[in-house]
Image (cartoon, rainbow, N blue to C red; front, top):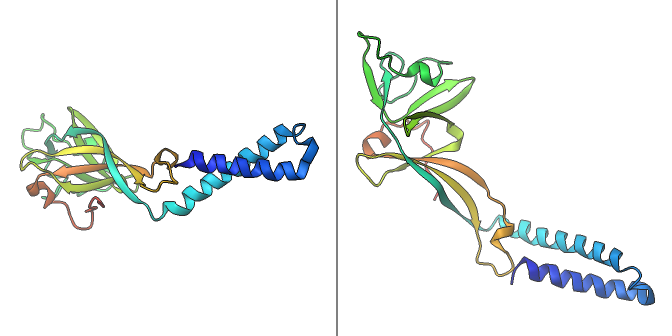
Length: 198
């Protein structure tokens, strides 16, 4: 049983009540009955879904996964944990300039920086620099000691309730999870750490 059953039961009840109300003119008013029935059935279906949603478990399913690459950052712009030392310096300005013969490289799989008043995480995937808002990023340990990767995860409701169809439950959110090797995971400051809630 699912939302279709709720919809059908509601339509039958509305039709029966309308038959009592319209009597002989029921067939003449069949479109009004269908309209009322459809509206009531929709409200009933949504009410069941909304009332049970808060008690449902959630799950994260990966949409894609990409391997993280090590970034060469300018040592004068970051600390030992890969956190910027300068406010309002964009991601590309932290990258080591190969033309600078006196500069020192700091290697990291991530960069935490503040730009336009928001904390961002800078990464390198598939030879491209990517930026994510920290509020959309979670952290977890990688299953590999030397390889890190990022996954785009969809958080959805999970229901074994026979009255609720999972197709009618909306996606809660889309987040990104950085799976870091233990050595990199230990570098993430506690104030910026957001563990994946599983």
